[in-house]
Length: 468
Image (cartoon, rainbow, N blue to C red; front, side):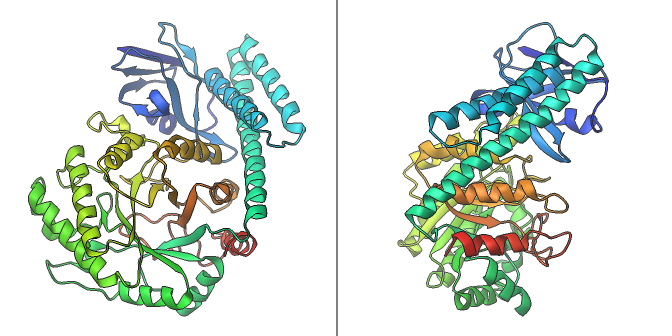
């Protein structure tokens, strides 16, 4: 058993309970591990089963938005750590490591970044040496803010360098940029969409399509497919099977836990859908959420088996199509549940080792509540996630959204970082409008453009500058 305890700041920047309730210890490859958590006004204690070191991560307010920040690796010890100081130390080390990596790769950086890092390091020293706890914690909070801003600026410099290098090699870029749609669009929406995007991800909702067994309703998908073809958009469809949202027909629920029956139902639906649209759609996301959604009484090994069955079924119908599968909460947020053994990378690796042939791996980066949404991350977190999955040798399709009302800078910087990444094949914003719910809580929508939806013009300009 390993106990990590922390002395809490006397003054918090916001309400502390939502922060402490979501604190966790991360182990190997920064994946959360199950912990028992307790806290009061003075102390946070986290107990993990393995007597091993780890780092503490939690959501923290940074410049008006919530981010995940982390300590450096902490050894197990009886004395409590100082929470604000250790979080500041983690942010400074993260910025130092990034600066060293960029220098080693000979990425040109503005000179002021080096000076900023020195200033932040001095401020951290003042936090560590302060005798008064309130002054110490105040210095630590300033360091967290400054180090996070510095990491953003360095990530932005890397993004700019990558975009320039890729555009010099090939302009426009072949990256696909689109939204997830499940409802037909009005004419004014259609025109605006086609100005902003070169692709579309059509999301079938099984619960709507087959409300009663063997009685299929294609009234929403058919017009979407026709419109996308007329608009000249690159079409993909999926996920065809999704265990994380409210899209499983009610008539299936009595078969929960019955793998043979469930596999037959899923394969029949997937086979019917692919047969209907195989001549109009060549790219499919076969399934998503199998790594973390414990739905219908299917354990992790059953979900792996179901994934294999679905791909076999789909390939028999259309051997030439391009298939992807999706991971939700790819940072492994769900691993705080001790009943879920597979980290996202391990789940994907287990599937690929069975001989599963796919053209891309889809990562759902959408933050939010519920089984699908994860915790909010910054652009550097996203870059490091792509690096973690690169050993699988798959291009990436990305589903993403983030808060846009007010300050949309981080969200759009993340989109730009993903477009600049050579390993990203396609990027789909989760919600075009509030009407496009996909059977799950809607993400931050783009349309119509307004004070609350300010990002649509940015996407229009991004397509014109960089994409086909």
